[in-house]
Image 1 (spheres, rainbow, N blue to C red):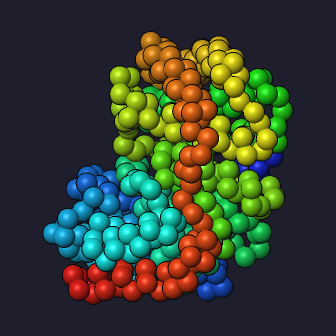
Image 2: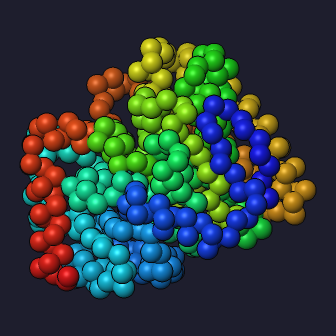
Length: 407
């Protein structure tokens, strides 16, 4: 059971009483009559064949307060898209599957590319961005949740607690970030948050001094969680990265667009486990190695927009500071794990820290060498300005795909 302590500058909504799901559900069904709710599920086709997503869909089919579910489907052929339509057909809610690799959405994407406002690379960011666009086009939801499709410990309470803060008409939150303990099967997980993000934020504070943005980011208990919820207006002006910096980018955009008291984080799960990425010690183009580089670049870029100047010497100091702080964190986590009877391999932890330290240098050099890089996907407000009928065309393409091949 959590304590009630509030740290940092973002409101934390704890799980203090283990309130029953039925009780939460009754309230949410009442909220839904005043503030319709939706859900976005960014998915790879391979996740339809895994263990997690079938269970997630079975549980979602019992959720009455969600009115619309928008599913983004990546890496799917025509036959796989048809299979997906059948797979998701058990959902009683209105639902649409975006066939991101289909000819209709590809044609629209090509036109947006020509205008310079489309995502430049495939990935979760692009998938989420198109799902957000369809949600705006559909105009059926006022509060929207988003979560990953590989959560093997999923239950209905996770979604209920995630969307509650933005669905409750008595609250004024525009955005809510989910958090949870990354402990499962007797192990302490969450290496990128534990061993990269938190010590890196503390290192920035040490090297460049106090910044409100750094305090803000350090207030989130699990900044890399892929679960968040928002009011529909948030979708129009948010600019997100298309790479592994998605979660950091979303938090940075909320910092730019909203006052701190309009944002919160909520405890959504006692146990959380999902598909784990490889460390990829010798391949910086994949796994946790690429993730760490993308995340670090996102932090450099955000601080630069606030007037920070970085040099090679600054980056070297940051790397050295990070390395010392991260090693101290390993000892802290090891002691915590021991006291709780959990496993924590210090050797593997230190190998991860060594890789992250090296990747801080790589990310910093990339940032210095590419001053004109535009990593963010355009906001939907800008896209609408460039192509005024884009939402109607996006909606029409999705509806025609669903009608022609399944619904």
